[in-house]
Amino acid sequence: MNIADEINEVIRKITSSGESHQVILERAFGTGAADLWNACTNPQRLSRWFEPVRGDLTLGGRYTLTTSGTEGEIRRCEPPRHLAITWEYQGNISHVDVEVIPAANELTLLRLTHPDDHWDTYGPAAAGVGWEESLRALSRYLGGDARCDPDAMEAFAGTPEGQELTRRAANAWGRADQEAGTPASDAETRALRTAAFYLGGTGEEQSDG
Image (cartoon, rainbow, N blue to C red; front, side, top):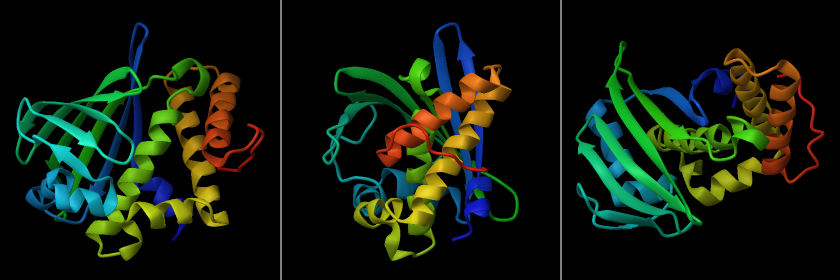
C-alpha cells in the first residue's frame, strides 16, 4: 500500500454551525452506484467489511451493529442514492448521512457526513480517522481483497505501516481543522491527541504528514 496515495483518496471537509460540527468524507470507488449501495446496506456484505447487523433494515426500522452495540433508526432510505440513520452509542445520539453519487470514469462517490461528539478534545480527527478506516475496508472489499474483514483491518492497524497511516490521517484532519479556522497550534494538538488515542500512545506522536 502506498500511504500517500491512500491519504489522497479521501476528501476531508468540516462544517460548523454554532456548537455543532460535522465531518464530511468523500471517497471514490470503482463500481456502480447500485453495487456500492448494496455493499453498504446488504447485511451479508456489511459483515464482510464493517460489522454484522441485525434488525428491521427498512425505512423507520431499527438496526443494531452486533460487534460495537451501536444501534439506531433508519430515517431515510432512497436506493441507491441516500441513506440517513441515527447513530446511538453509549447514550449518545447523532446522525449519519450517506450519499452515493455517480461520478466520471465509471467511478461512484460515497459522501459520508457525521457530527463530531469530541470536538473540543480531538477536533474532527476523532470521527474522521475512524470513518476513513471503514472506507478503506470497503475499498478493499470491493477490490476483492480478503484483508477487508474487521480482524484483518485491526491487525493491519497494529503494523508500522498501519500506525503511520493512522498518524498521517490524523494530521490530514488537523490540516482540515486549520483550514476551517482553528488556530494552527490547536489543530495540531488535537490531531496528535487523536493519533495517540488510536495508537494507544501518549499524544506525542510525530509525523511529517
